[in-house]
Image (cartoon, rainbow, N blue to C red):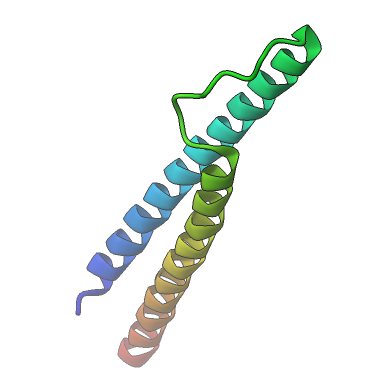
Length: 89
């Protein structure tokens, strides 16, 4: 296994998780704002076109786990590289 590919995979996975966390957070904010506006205007709740708050919260939790796993991959690759450098010096 190449260390650079482990770094690359870890960083790409972390970036995907980060993007998904951002998207889930935006969805939660939009749903919350829409719900608050409808309550303030005392209008009936309209069905939303995006994912529900519950779905977004589940996505948020899953992507947190994905981000942590990818960070562990990056840390392991970093430690392996440090060991290799120590062996060669």
